[in-house]
Image 1 (spheres, rainbow, N blue to C red):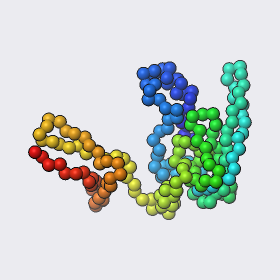
Image 2: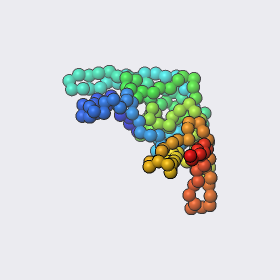
Image 3: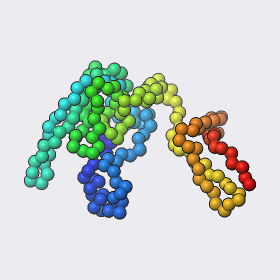
Image 4: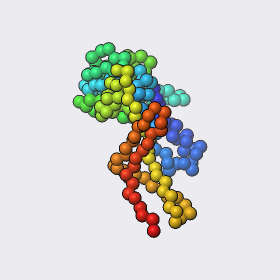
Length: 203
C-alpha cells in the first residue's frame, strides 16, 4: 500500500532540515495517480456502503516499553465489485487512529474504494488514495473494463504574454472556473488548447 509520511518521518525531517519547517504539514501524500493507474496498482476496487466500524487493539514495542494502539476497521456492503471482490460484504482497515494521516469512513455513506493489501481478506485504504464518496471515477473504470478507456488530459494551463512595449514577458493564467477547450486533430498531431483570455490592446 502507498504509505504516507507519518509523524515519525516528519519529526526527522524537522531535525535534519529545520529550514523547511514552515512548509511541513501533518500528513503529506504524493500527487494522486489517474483512475487507470490506481486501478492497476490496487489489490481490490469496489463501490459500497459503510455498515459498521470497530476499533482493534494491537501492541507496539518501543525500546523496553509496550504501547497499545488501535486500528479502525469498517465493514462495507459491496454494491459493485470492480476488481477482486467476490463477497457481498468486506472489511477494510483505515489504519491507526492516532496518526495525522488517519482518514476514516462515515457509517451510512457510500464510497468508491481503492484497497491495498497482501490478499482480498486483509485490505486497507487511506488518505493517500483515490478512495472517495464521489463516483466520478466509475465512468472511467467502466470504460476501462469494457476495453475502451477514454483519454483524459491532466495539468494546468499558463499563458506567456509577449508585450512588445516591455523588455520582459508576463505570465498570466486563465482564471479559476474559466473553460478551457481542447481541439483534437488527426493522429500524431499535437493537441491545441483554446483559452478564453481577454484581448489586450497595444498602445
